[in-house]
Amino acid sequence: MVELAIFFFLAVWHLPQAPKLIAIYDARLSPKPAKLFPADVALARGAARAAWSNQQNCDSGFEALDIAQGSFTKAQVSQRAILYRHCTTGHNFASDGIAIVEGDRLVTQVAYEGAWDYAIGALPDINKNGLSEIIVATGGTNQGITWGVISIIELSSDGVKKLGQFETYEDNCGALSKKESTAHKLYVEAGDHPIFYRETFAKRGCDNRANWMKSKSTERIEADKDAVEYRRLN
Image 1 (cartoon, rainbow, N blue to C red):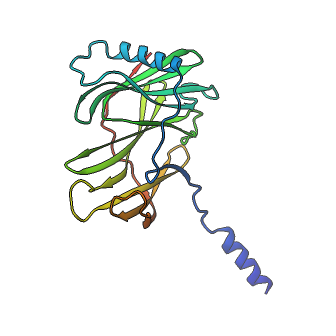
Image 2: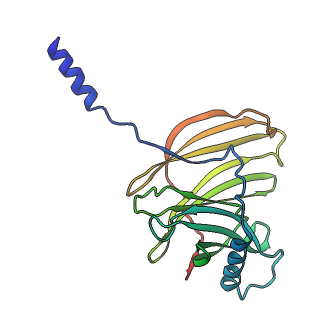
Image 3: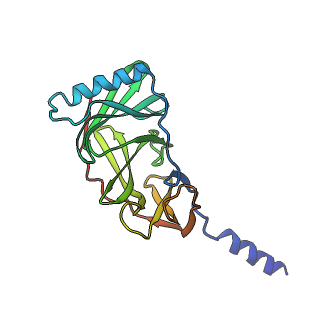
């Protein structure tokens, strides 16, 4: 019995540990923009003017969209990341930016030709270098298909580091008679090289009251390439 107990103990001791996963995004939920104070809006507006001074042919004007709290350029320093849209240039095309504010001053910003980005968030340093990563949510509808994507970036010492893009949502509510929706809940295993996972949910129809049902268990995934060209401006 002693030998058996020792064998059992050693077997359990050497069992692989399940990864510690951090939930970072759930497309079943609708993110609500955080409150933006007039001073933050003014700083973002000034940043947009500086970044897009040569912009012409806008379909719509400046809008401050969302704000997130984190430490984006310096560890353990409270900063705010303000997502803004300088102007819409076409269907699901826009001149976007992220202004990084510390106290009452603009520290830096990122400008890019993006889409109809609508939400921003801070991740809890998933690559263990002391900085908060930035998550940006975007989406749109084309020919009756609605889709959602998130991008994860970090403000590195030499510009912008891309951690990839991830599909989050899709439905065919404006296209086919058999309507279906799919949403992903995304997780990350933090480390020098973060590992991403997702859980998949589905529902029939487009009624918000319909229940989501898990259609695929948690699985490891690879990030899609982020083709956006980010400009870091100081």
